[in-house]
Amino acid sequence: MKKIFLLINFFFCLISYGQNNDEIDKIRNFIPDGYEVLNITKGDLNLDSIPDLIIVLNKIGERDMYNPAPKRQLLIFFGQSDGTYHFINKSENIVYSHDMGGVSNPFPFGWIKINDGFFSVMHSGGMGSIHMKRITTFKYSLLDKEFYLYKEEGESGQFSDNLTEINKTSIIETEADFGKLQLNKYSIYDNTIFER
Image (cartoon, rainbow, N blue to C red; front, top):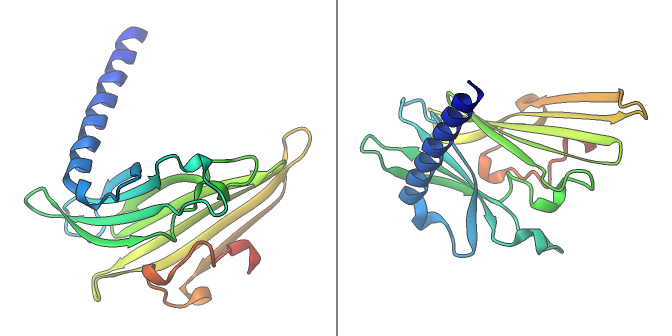
């Protein structure tokens, strides 16, 4: 039974890998020389029931680059009824560069989730016993066809010697805190939720 489960799991991984390669082939012209796909996420961003794409790109060999580390690019594509993708937007200020996770987490980028007109980006990091998590959410406006910052969630804490979490702090900020902010005017590097 275990062998069958592993075989089925392997089969679905191959299908997913092939589907992602198909999607990458459709937008390959938007990937600059020297960059590779770090993450690809599908979902309905503009509420037309056609799957859209968010792609995160990183510089090839970025782990050896510092001072400054190269920024990662986030690209947004709207799916078309013919199966192609239309480029919508690009930002180098939504996904942290590889060196922003702190000593205990050299890989700060966690995931992207798309949910009916919203997309969220999660980062984590820390140093020693201190850890942090940050989720930034954007919302698509059907009215003016733009993405706006919807919410920033931050969590920080510390682990004691017996790995019990202590000094946990959670912060949630919305448009009432940061105003109406378009995706292209947002920078994760300028907006550190724990410093406000």
